Image 1: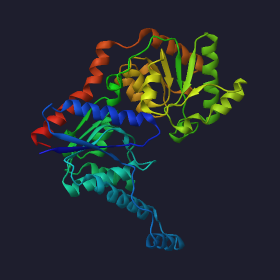
Image 2: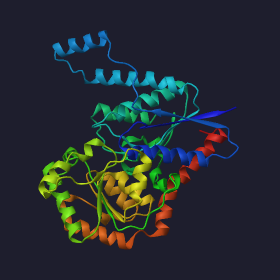
Image 3: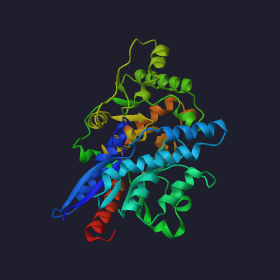
Length: 386
């Protein structure tokens, strides 16, 4: 009998790093299954929701607003229920759900905690084992009801495995009950296999890639650098690189918001139009990064894809996940906070990273951790032990 695996992730994201996560995780799972395994595959966009608010719901919220009652939990429960209705359409005949990865275990902003709670509750109702692959873990608050909803869901017996690419201590010691910590492990992000999955190799190049990011992201994550200061930092990066007479390329990971600083950069530099590559597909993102000699970027997956391609990078840290990635690959000094370092120093670090590259034995070992765990999960799935 044919068995079915559903890969759940951010299928329709314009941040193409999430699409790379999806496709590399899918590929690793498919390769890990034995050639004789009779398995079909499908995808689920976890951001899919099925219904608009009905008249009764709108009336309920209006009455609560009139009496100045807190509507937050009511709105969240509706979003959870809407997501559950949509998920059920895709999961009735599924034997395993794989959450492919990305920065999902968080609750302060974005709606990922809603999607995960809904997905786990549907999996439980349909008796479908669910595993989380190399997810990011951000923040914990024992007094925040959103965080506690997520914690309760993650500890349900239907959740068979949770691996994280970053904060294993927070996952084990805060989110997981002591009896469930054995379900967790630390692995690399599946995008470290972008080179193999996309069949793209590093080019011989002198071009430096400068990855742009939206101006407010540092302040949104409690880092002391404003949009104006970030604009000036990018200007100084460009000036320093131009003084070295080296070619450079500005780029994004696909998000429209990440080019919002360009007008300010152009004005300060007195340029009419700077060349910025905004890739339209995940393949274009990978192929573009392969053409750089070194990358300076704030987006995590610009750095992870560079790592996959053996292109050294310097990460601009707006979130601890970048710092942890630098530590995990053995180059914490290459991940820096722009408010604590000058553009001149960053360029010098980039040149040093370009010349030294990565220790290849460590590069291979780190990459292998995600493949090893996926092999374990697929073996258990085929044996019926999940």
